[in-house]
Image 1: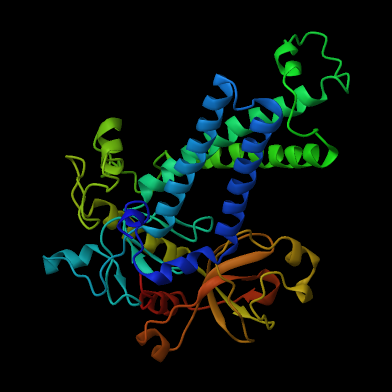
Image 2: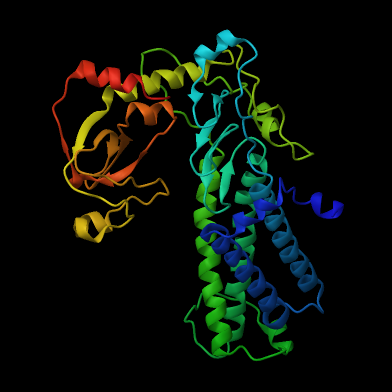
Length: 393
């Protein structure tokens, strides 16, 4: 058990349920298919183990698989780290710079955010990733980023194996017409494969090649996005300095990647730029929240909506143009009031205006709904502002 804990740390046994989700099922299936086919193609048809190169190639394939799974499971089960329930800053005056979470009954520390999926405030939350069925945050950021780097590298190696396997096995059977391609096939022809390269083997290899190339492109793009810090700041005409940029890429790198695998800091306080303080970003976020409330538009529901992801009775465009996101859909009844903050041509996103009792209980209902189910209503601006001010940040 101690040996297992050095590889994967389970907060509790309930964490195993994270595997029962379409994201991990698909991700682990792709890893299993690409790894298995690459190993089989190598030792049976392309590069047998009785050669030095074949042995090195086999060891590299095993290493890719182990490293990818190690970082994947740690990103899933170690978790991002959560803000303690009911957390408050040591200096009570600092609470004015922080947002309050009624679900967790505490304040959100700098860089934290409440995740609706995890139902907790997450330390340095980046996003909730469906592929690991968990949030990417403070304690698992290094594992997640390492997985995003290793997966394209391993899949690229596997893709080369798949391509060379099909080329070498079909070299004598099909004329490719590549007059400029000169590959010495004498060494390959001297080795008799353990079994013939049949049509099912070709189909399986071709399918695995598609998965490997798709993973390399998709996960590689996600890695570059993940490696780049981005922030949209409130437009005030002021020069905004990102407070957690320490002025050196190496210093920023060491904040996340350490030899022990545990990132620096406690997830509540952070080293900041000399011209900033702990609450520079939270003040900026509060400004954005206020600006968002001012720009919200009030709508009234004129049609019933049951909260379906792809409603069949709301038109073909609404059905096919449903937002590709895990953000929730909110059911509507005639007469409901919604404060919309963004949207597309066929869908809108906003907060449902709740009763006083629901707001005191800390409820908040927000999500997507079909645009055809609501109509813009004329309302008193002052009344709307007073209503929105009651909303929790």
